[in-house]
Length: 307
Image 1 (tube, rainbow, N blue to C red):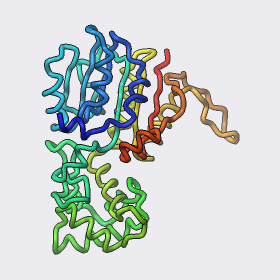
Image 2 (cartoon, rainbow, N blue to C red):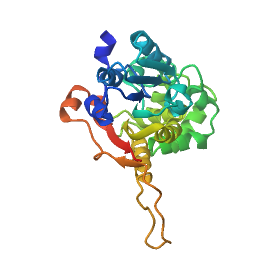
Image 3 (cartoon, rainbow, N blue to C red):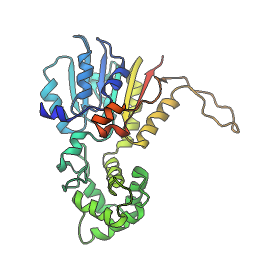
Image 4 (tube, one colour):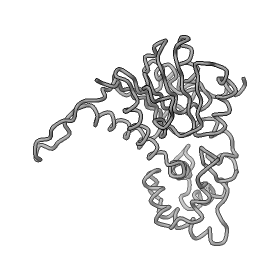
C-alpha cells in the first residue's frame, strides 16, 4: 500500500476522461506502471466491461498480477505495447487505449535499475530486464559516432561529440558500467553549465530511449492502436519528451484527412480521415505540478477513431 502512495499517476483525471469510458467497453492500458490509470478506468467499468493490462517491466506486471489477477474483467500480459495487436484479447477491437510513455517513477526511484544519476548503481536502463542489452553493454561496443548520434538525436545534447570521445577514450582502461561513473565523466567533460540541471540529464535520457527502442515502439504501437480501435474509440497518450509528443501529434495529423501538400507542388489527394483530435494538447495544472514536479514536461493528446 505504501508504494501506491509514493507513485502519483500523471494527468490521471484528464487521461481517463479522454477515454470517455463506457461501462461495458473494452480498454487497454499499454503502460500499466503501478496501476494508477488502470484503477481509474476499472472503477468506471461495469461487470461486462473489460480492461487489458500490458507492461514491458516485469516488476510492473508482478504488481498487476498481485492486485488484479482475481478480477474476471482484467487480463494481464507481459509485453511491449508495440505488440498489442499480437494479443488475442485485442482481436475483437478496443473502445479505448491509454499510453503513459517514458520511464515511470518507480523505475527512476529504484537505483538498481540504472535510470538515474542520483545514486550510483549498475548502468542498466532496460525497462524489460529479461531481454536486450543494457546501457553499459551498448557503451562497451558502440563506435564514437554511434554514441554521439544517440546523444544528439535522442537527447539533443550539444556536447554529444565531446562526451562520446571521452567515453571511448575512458572505456579502453575502465569499462563504463555504473551510473555514477558515467555521470562523473559527463560532468568532467561538460561542466555544470545549467543551474539546477545536472549535465548528465540529456545523455541519460538519450541512452534510455536508445536502449529501450522507445521511438520505434511508439511508431509500431500507434499503427497497431489505429487498427484495433473501434469506430468512436479513443486514444489517450501522455508524452514526456518532445520527440515522443511530435510523433503522436504528427500521427494524429497524418490520419486526420488533411492535405499536407506544398503550394508549389502538384495537387495532393487527401487520404480518408481515420482519426480526429479531441481538443488541443493538454498540460498538467499548477495544482498537479505543486504536488508532483515530475509531471512538468507531460503533454496529453487525445484522438477518436473515425468511421
